Image (tube, rainbow, N blue to C red):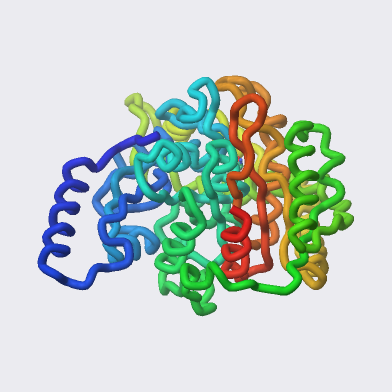
Length: 437
Ligand code: GLN
């Protein structure tokens, strides 16, 4: 789960925090709380690789805003977590450091791409951890590891110091055992930041103080009818969902099915747009500016340096996505793929707005299945992409989502449900989550 543990440093920090406590000083809200961070989030003077060979031996010159705020609040950063290379993947098998195993069953993957951060919390190696969620990389591994995984509204948490995968989708997310820890961490790391022009200056409520408010009366929750027409959906998860809806109705929540015919387009739209953005973001790793540089022959020119460094530095999935992204952005195909996908994204936003005019939340399974076996889907990327069907929606429309650990499958593995809310309604989302968990 960890690529590196900052052992000595963490111990030192712990003793100086302890000295502070003994001196009777008022303690900061995260005093001594042990936090782990995904290897895509910068921490000053610490190595960071994004799970990739291409950042081998690269050290960060500054801390991500989220990390700085955690430190300022008294947290101890214990280490950096393994993840899929550049956060691309759903099983954590695309890491240059090898896979992470699910602590519920070591023959299974933990999910991805923030698999290490999920297992670090699942196996109690830290209290909370930070991951990144571009299409489900926090909510999906949380679902498979039986913990809480939360992705905020796009722009709620600064992306300064987060290595980019797809910039218009990426958000830092939080793993924890319960809703209140997530609420507390969120209120500390969220909010305006001069280093990220896409971050929102919407005031940050005291989420942890608002967990017991009742956002609406009655609470109205929608779910997409089409979710249950998806053939990849496990029968037991489907049954659990319907039974859960029944229970919610008995408790007085209004839960209704709505039509969402665009559901079948969301995975293709996500993969067209994110690979396009990734191909551009990853062009900076050229063997010159950062980390790894391939060994060259005497006659090799600059182009050879780029080619060899990128060929040896990037793994297979990252290369696949650079190719896909370059293809959909290329002159002949731009209109057919990239522009089309942007148009679909706009339609999704419009339909999402229409749903939230009538409902306050959307409920869905988080993932169609429980955790895969290690190695099971490695050779079938398309099948792997399709498993993202319920999580990519929130990133496409920029809304917050949370996966709540609610069930155990007859195969012994955990699974949960996902709740989503309108943009910047994190306080309501967390309050309802608190009621349900
Ligand atoms: N599984 C998705 C992908 O591979 C999500 C990744 C993420 O959220 N970083 O793109």
